Image (cartoon, rainbow, N blue to C red; front, side, top):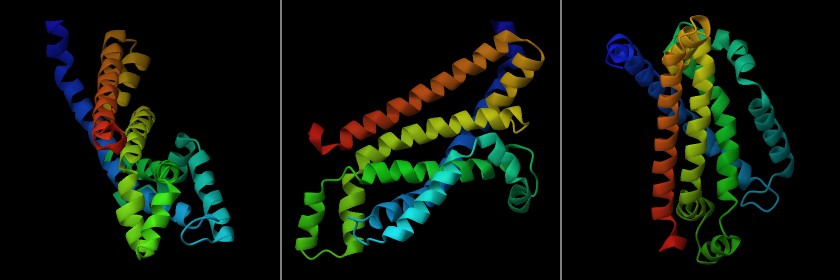
Length: 222
């Protein structure tokens, strides 16, 4: 075991750091895009604050199209855009561009689901008290849906983490790339098993932290 870590420890540490970077940074940017998209989906529904049925149908269809594209196909399709943004289509930095594009529509639907869980009576009460649409969105809908948004955050992070394994197999680095090079190409199963274990640890930590925060912020648990 000591020989294993002396030989592969630095490699696995670097791969873990790269994987965390390729997961956390795209998640942040994807939420910058996905959160307002989800809000727009909710606001423009037939019973929303700003109903626009035809716009909502077209906008929702575009979100569904982007969300349904297999990640590997999307990653290849956006290579010219990736080169434009990152200057290259290879490496950890370049992989973040397709990760953000793939995650944003997924997050938009997750946000939409969370916001729809807010009790309509609370929204109506805020409206009766004179709150405008912006105040209702920020102080009521988003605030009341924080626990659900946190649970959705854990799902989103884990989903993006899974995408990083695909980018790793395409040469982007991270634990996925290590598992592919050493487990698939060189048949060094011990390295592959350790990378899988590290990914499982990351998943468990993310799930645990988000679930704990969601429970603490959920008013129903007080």
